[in-house]
Length: 556
Image (cartoon, rainbow, N blue to C red; front, top):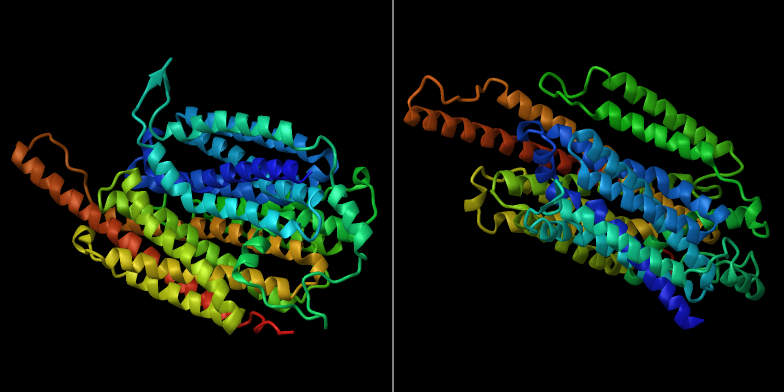
């Protein structure tokens, strides 16, 4: 039995890793994709839906499809998601225009967002309470590994030479998505051979838990009912446990109910997707030459805010909820979720626009740009480890505030990058390390704090809220900050006339083209540095909000 569960864990971890890689792989090749679908480099705002489309599907699908797996079974839902993931990959690889590539990425996002909670729920079925954290931590590590390696993975695959077969492009950035098809097929075979056909909700491990532990016995708390400190390893475990939230909330609401009788909060899922979709559409401006927002921006954003309000109202009153947080201390919880939201916004802005900076101002190819971003990602990983260790000694709030302050300093330094980045030497690397280290320090304290303000029975639900908040921050943050940045670029280049090689001698044309290119580069430099400055203010806002997080954990 133990060996069989290890095989299941390997298959589940591989599935989660595959989805996590594709969540971030596109930031490396976004410019290449934009060029191939006829998006000009001076209108990169039209490429942002390639990123936001995936994130929108990912966030909207995560809680709802996790609930569907409780009703219809883990293995059928994993197979369906892998098939949808492969379909989305094919649509993206074949895309010849903006609409098709965005549609393909959105389908990938829906499928990828569902794979994580279903895998975590499967672990809840097969592992008992004592062994479950290790399994959850392993899958959580696969998720974090995918996010860290995604840009490098995309950069390496983008080096595959261009190959055309039957008028279908197989090489370059297309190879990233074509490779997903056999990988998804292999994952489906592994799931078919290892994952039990039945067993949803109250599986083997759940029955064992019920037989060995009373339902009202506290878990993970001290003898006096207060939460104990969480170390760095358990932070990864609790981050992974976030995707198990749907099942945890359902079990808490119906600890002895049958799986077939469980209801799915379809209304809540639709309201969440509608609110996020309206906000993203309202922030997307395909022509930012005259204004930050499109003509429909404010009304659509207002409609999104109304939909979000209705979603909150529904979740408070509905007997079946996507994220059941009743009984949790709302003030500290909301502050912690806000910190996670703002940190997520800063994170994705960095991953996208450092990549843009390296490719446009430094002249790097996809792999070279991803290696520049690797400085930030390595520091982010190290910061996550140190953050967990420091939080044990200093408390979650202190480390979160300090981390965001350090991150703000790093982004302020990045906003002062010179136009001649190639001659800046180690300045670029050091600034990226400072920003990455600061954001990394926040990861563990946020996960720890949300667990301390929630009852033990709702740890999974609260952790899920942290993950959803971070992904929502990525989604809304990249949409909002890029809207401002692209507007600034268009306003800085509106007066420039593209030189044409007609009516002038070759030498004059070369001089005019050189001057035009220099001014465009200067406009890009201004755009990027101002966006990093905005990100610094996002971190400062996060540090201020982090002051409202709960204090250090009580020691037993």
